[in-house]
Length: 101
Image (cartoon, rainbow, N blue to C red; front, side, top):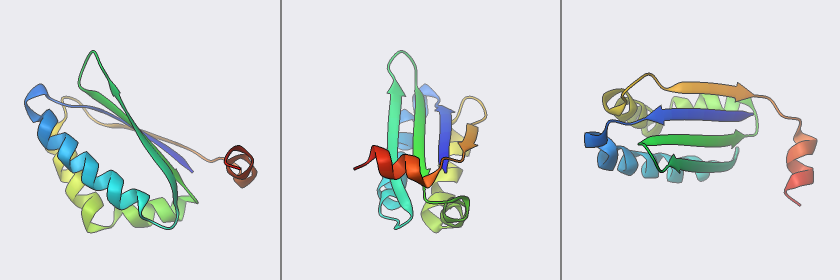
């Protein structure tokens, strides 16, 4: 499962958001079923795009119930200029294995 999350952060909350994002990505990448996580920061504005590769939808949904994920979500709600955009896409396991060997 590929999860893409786009977040436009208020200028005054960027530092607080980056701290919460760092905690989230460290916790997420330590999960057994998290295959990869990457964050892009668009330089001309305070927009962050996060890509999370999970073994399956259930693994991601389970992580969303964790305390670190809930803490990050509270920060997201408080820090964003507009609603977060989340999209998901299922990828075949063979794609991941072929591209990471």
